[in-house]
Amino acid sequence: MGEPVPVDVVASDPVLEAGTKSTLFACPELCPTAPGGAPRVVVMTVDRVGRPELDVLGTVRDTPARPGVVLVAGELPPDAALHAIAAGARGLLRRREADAPGLARAVLAASRGDCTLPPDLLDRLLERSAAGAGAGGGTDDGAAGRAGAAGPAAHGGLSERERSVLRLVADGHETNEIAKQLCYSPRTVTTVVHDITQRFRLRNRAHAVAYALRVGLL
Image 1 (cartoon, rainbow, N blue to C red):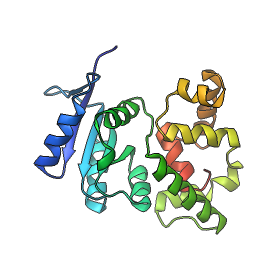
Image 2 (spheres, rainbow, N blue to C red; image 1 turned 90 degrees about the horizontal axis):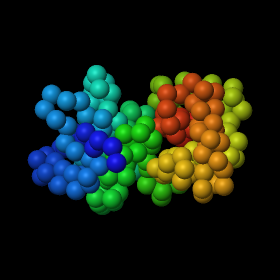
Image 3 (cartoon, rainbow, N blue to C red; image 1 turned 180 degrees about the horizontal axis):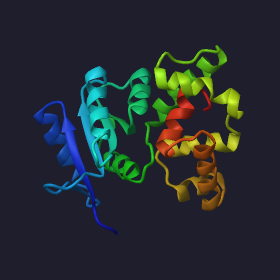
């Protein structure tokens, strides 16, 4: 096992902060960021996801360390989840799901640049995305709207294989796990993700999942 992943915690009140730290650092693969050090991941724990929380998320992502952000919220409806992903979150959890194994899994995935969503929330986002695409509608979010305008029509959408890989990426599975589930080689999975990010000029796996959801490719 390598060095533990340095993590910071940002919470809307001291009780939430203490509880999150207690749960988080029960995992030996994670540790608090050393004084003067830079976190690789920041866990944000909030009651709800509104504009103030999204502003904080954006501020955290814009620090020089560019840490991955795992957002833990008491309430996480699909609209809020989409806005959080667009703002740069690499992991989303409802507070009731943020036990020690679940939180550690999301944080470790974020440290690798992967994106984790609760399976049922992913399903709801996929349904909404499909409905929006079928109605010819996009979104009134500026950046996502611009991406959607040049997305599926310009690039031909995603193949079923690409959709299958991205769904498992969004559920937090690693490359080897995805390969086993889909009966592909790990190299094939890596190539599929690379092709998607290159085709749509995306930064990483998390950005690929967010983009695909926003423009109706999944």
